[in-house]
Length: 178
Image: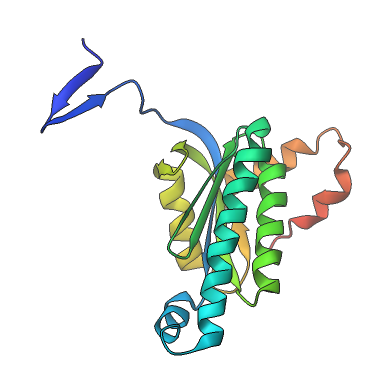
């Protein structure tokens, strides 16, 4: 069968969409809607929104420059960051999300999120898949407080990365069970 098909006036390449097993982080800024509402009259709120935009630009440069080596992809929309990597890179994803969250907190922008492992399509700014839906749902219903949580599959991958103890074994303590 042909891989290109015209659907509703749009040419669709059926081979360009696929799911891969990936680890994905969904991170959401807390209080962003209130901040945006205030930003039309409150200079401090406007400065924070500008800082977030600058953070997005920094995030995009970081992803394109450094994460390509570890099959990383990043996206930013509204008040949310999405970062994904191949499923065997949980350590790197946890590390980079930790850096992002600490940076945002230094700007006075607390966040919470979730990391899941599963099927995902992530190419540049296009991201969709069951793993993202699960990360979003965990962030909304389980994370509750400013923190980033991991699903069971990601914890299992995290533990597997430390058997036998690798060079970054001191980092194993980053993950704690609530």
